[in-house]
Image (cartoon, rainbow, N blue to C red):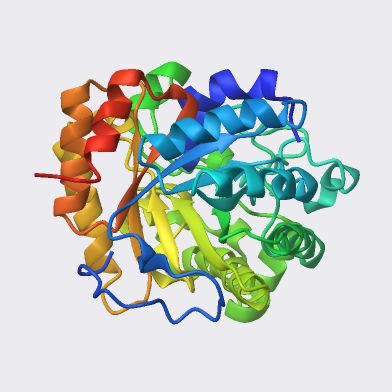
Length: 374
């Protein structure tokens, strides 16, 4: 995977925002086929996302995980760059501090993937004919694979299976399980001097030969000939369903390995559909962690409650939990308190904080206190 020193500073400010549900559930166990994991073990779950480097010592991880456990966290989502050995090494350290471990992986966006890089044809192609292999949109690490092509799909699913087999892991956690952004969050547009009032060709994916030929075979029309592809619902649904197919297969793989399936998703389904071709309320999945990062959308704290409620409503009737993702940098303690309240009071099953190392001492006090609200 991409070197951490190159990825993380920009990642914290941008990458998740580019990624970047149901009525409150009864206190019953999920119908998952897993043997050892019940989503409802914790009434209101507290999570965080972290990235692990294999060069770190076990003692340094122990110190970090102790802080998380001592301050009330229940679960950590760990990005090991797809490394099952590192993940297996971290599981017992986390469990020592009563933390669940969830295997977090970049899914369709695969920067630094040495196997994929040997196959340029696996990469998604924009409407103006540019491949993510050598001409990625927005930023250099936007290396999106095509979800339709058999070989790229199988590669992704093999990576999922490798992490899902690690003993002691609670779930496999899908990230970047979507297409590249057709629209950026509004708060990020000035950083790129962009206006996105329509679906622009350079940000519209995937138009590779496999996608367009398969669609034409099914629907007797070719997307390359559309005057305005944005209004063709079959073409949009074709792509939504290609992402769903990978999620559904990941669900099968994880459950066969006695794990559940979770995912980081965009704020609520209609918004995710519009921005990144992601309709997560249709997926076979145990829990979603929508990244309701109000700052990136120029929204106030109460928007966290609005977006949470939208997701909860859209998941009604499905056995899927929703845990609200909160972006903590630059958030005051009062704002963080209100953000957690907005999530809880609008039906979330928990909250996840991006990301662990960014949480300040004052914020930790708020998080710990949130486990026992007045």
